[in-house]
Structure formats: C-alpha cells, structure tokens
Amino acid sequence: MFWIIFRLAPVSVAVYPFLVPIAWLMTLLAYVLSPIIASISMITGSNQVPWLRWFYTHDASLDGGIEQSKDGYDPNAKGFKLWWQRVSWVCRNPAYGFVAGPLGFSAEGSFITYESGAAYPPVSYWTVVQLNSGFRIFSYRHKTRWLGWKYTPIAGRHQLKSKPF
Image (cartoon, rainbow, N blue to C red):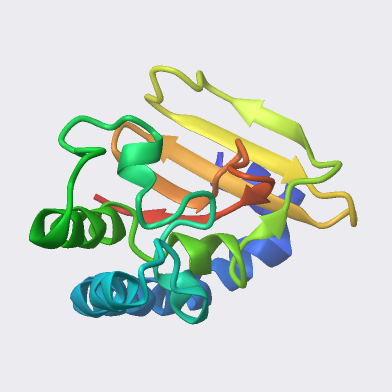
C-alpha cells in the first residue's frame, strides 16, 4: 500500500519525514509556552494572543473549550480557573496553528483522489488528497496512529498529523 501512496504523492511522502521533527519541536514548545500564553491573555484581557497563534488552535480562541462546550470548561470561570482552562486548551491542541498554517495546506478545491480502507473506525485508512494547485498529500490512519495530512479539513486547512503511537 505504501508504494501506491508513494507513486501517487511522491513529494509529500518524501518531505514529510523532514517536517515531523519541526512539528514535534513546536508541540513541545507549545506545552512549555502554554502558561505564558494564558498569562498574556489574562493580562491583556483578550482570549487571543495573535503573535503566539501558531501554538494553539487555528480555528478557535484560547476559550475554545468554552466556545465548543467541551466537558470541564466553565463558561463562568474567572481568575486562576480561567487561566488554567486556557493553559489546558493550548495543551489539548498544541501547535495546531503551526501544523495547519505553515505545515498545512489550504483545503479550497481539494478532493480525495485515492482511498483504501474505512475512515471510521480507522483500522487502516490510506488517502491521497489532491489540492487545488494539483499537488497531492497523503494520509494514513490506523487506530490511534495518524501520519501525513488530515484528509478532512478543519477551518479550511489540511493540517500535518504525526501521531506515530
């Protein structure tokens, strides 16, 4: 199966191993910076820190847990509790802005050109997505493992995925 994917999307398969360490580094940095990002947001009174946007989700503010009604996120939180919710939100989706932005691709006009397996439950699911530019990206999903780029876009972006375990 790998060779079929490699034949269909050779450049993205070849570049992917070089992008993964960068994504992991940014993820680790997001964990380290999460208390600082949350503190800046508390000091400024904003649920956004635009110049640190790569370290949290590209499709929600630092109050994304509240906005999306996630369990454990209190819409009435203030002070330390709100700060902790924002730290938790960054850690829940670390560096998503980065893996969707500089390492991701616009989903506008993209479509799946190849798929093998079943998307849900993802036991062994391979896809190749053709972007509007003609460039192709791949995705492999097996239970909790996910490599390549997310085949279903979030907020108009195919984000890099690298969950090997």
